[in-house]
Length: 244
Image (cartoon, rainbow, N blue to C red):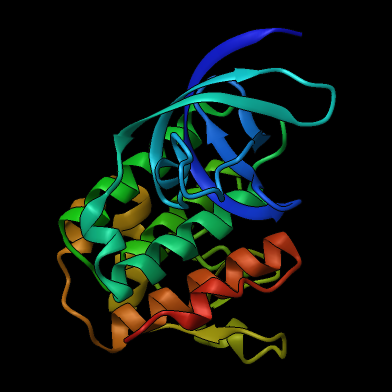
């Protein structure tokens, strides 16, 4: 045990005693870390305002047995536009909750850290109807849970031979009309909505984020939440608070 430096994104905080807070962070070098920030609730705290959720910070910490202790904190990016806009802040909370649920303490995941900081930078620049959904789909892919979208999950016929009309969330793939009628629960999806998911997972996330809000983006967003919740086996509270 000893001092170390890292950078991270604040996922959430909660009170500890009369003046301290526990800060939960996704760090670049150590994965998810729970740390105590002593005295940050006092008016004269040196770095209390730097440790708000959805802030990217450079830290010095002292490693402890259960909780580390934050001894220094400097802001890398406060994402001011996020904290000044209710809609963007709600989007950010939906991203942070998902990452908090997926990440494991002390398990390094540099790709997840870079995904999160990239999503927050994009959100600070502009709000997109598919930003949260796009992040969820990419997160599912990172977890090895991306749906099969180029052929029917059940009969195996490719998308260029048969119309795919929905996604079986439990099985993780698209189904055609004939197989949809077989009885299992399938979330209906339009072809444009399926194509949006293909673009997100296939490398055209920037283009997908430029799509205007509409029925197709709503289908993509709703299904992203349902699919991620099925993977996590729990409900995501923040995503249901998103302003439209």
